[in-house]
Length: 146
Image (cartoon, rainbow, N blue to C red; front, top):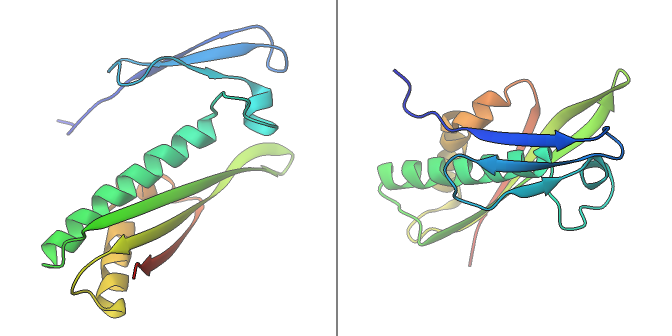
């Protein structure tokens, strides 16, 4: 039995280039989000993209995994900020999501660089979204604040 199932729906009208869509989560956690091809490949203009949503998923998942690992290692963080940049590139003539670059900045009292790096490595292996992206290049840059 799965731990969780979550659903979002996209309704699209028109062609890829001129059309537009709306992404709606079943959870109602956020209002419908507008999405267009131009917002995906040019300027967002207040709209989102699959890559931005994947970046949100990856950064939040990694933050959860890191805070779990730090607590298990008895060096809980006062705060962590995790960002993810997901890249859409052309590979063999096809749009392909190729990388997710994670940046972590954390305040972890009592942690030295070695303990922090170990926790970050463990979180990278634990995060389910990182495992989903297993075929993509995932980089992690992490630093202790202060």
